Image (cartoon, rainbow, N blue to C red; front, side, top):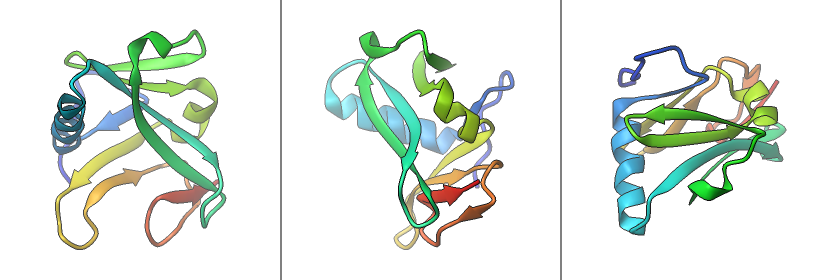
Length: 118
């Protein structure tokens, strides 16, 4: 795992590798977007992670915003109850590559790492 960027304690941690990857993906969109992270019901273990870009104008009063050198990660407060302390990393390995979630609140995770239970 790569080292997290931690200038201050944050509810959602982001590795330098993950930050480079999401910035690269955002730049391909051609817009100044933020990254929304959350949870939804479903997946092998009961809850699954969700992550998508969205326009910053959709940030609402129910959202927590984490700023990483001008790049915003947004999470609604209900999801943050399950994600507080989450470490988001990225690997470009051919097997097992992609975004990886390390959630200290998860009591169980599925084999693919995309869902969890509490």
